[in-house]
Image 1 (cartoon, rainbow, N blue to C red):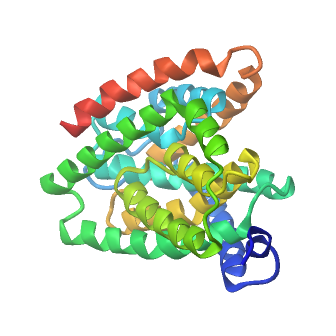
Image 2 (cartoon, rainbow, N blue to C red; image 1 turned 180 degrees about the horizontal axis):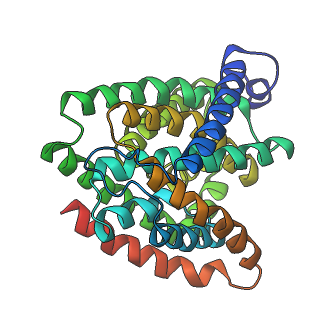
Amino acid sequence: MSDRALHLGPAPQLRLGRMAVIIGCAVALMVLAFGLSQLHLGVGAAGSGPTHFNPLYAVSGLLVGILVGLTGVGGGSLMTPLLVLLFHFHPGTAVGTDLLYASATKSVGTVVHGSNKTIDWRIVGWMALGSIPATLATVVLLYAMHAHGDSTAKLISTVLGFALLVTAVTLLFRQKLFKLAQSRNLELSARTKTVLTVALGAILGCLITLSSVGAGAIGVTVLIFLYPKMPVSRIVGSDIAHAVPLTLIAGFGHWMLGSVNFPLLGSLLVGSIPGIIIGSQLTARIPEAALRPILAITLILVGSKLAL
């Protein structure tokens, strides 16, 4: 089977990818509306932080949104450690809230990429086949470990730390990795690509459910090595589309475990949505190459603190 055959024609995986993302986008937008509507209500998870709108969180969302718009780094790499280290949220609450935040924001990005036809639905479907079962299994693991216990906090902090370190490495060497993938031009069989894509989805399912980090930097980098001939914009679009059902299911699992604070979610969205718009407008004036090393070093320091 050729690469062309892999991307054309109706198939269960293509339909699965589209259905998962369409349902994910619809529910994620409802989550966005619900989170914003809870800004004035005391409905946060018990013991997980404030239950009303906090301007400080909105400002944090604004700053993170600007950095995401400028660098393209996933919000989880910045927001989750900020909530844990600076605002002292339980790691489970930080991850759970960030997952629903990501599902809402990435659904908007998916609509944009879908209209631009920069999504390969077959890749989305294969990744979902691996990530959805892995996500559900990880949620069950968190339930068995007691979501708000000390052992769970330690596990999430450690996984988060290592995920940040890997993200930092991919940031520092992103261009070199892209050039290496293009120069090697690995000709894997369609079967091998499919198996590795499903495996990548499973790894991301576990990693993101535990840390909310990895979909952007790690997922895109691996996909570029698997599909070196595919335009980067199409790989990024496929990765964002896959992240919608993944983060939604993982976030819903954390919600059922009591690890989501909706007033916090609403506060972050109030700041991050305009922040992403501002950052995207500033990309032409502030070179990403100047910010990437500073951001990577920051992630290394933060990741080391969480992992150790």
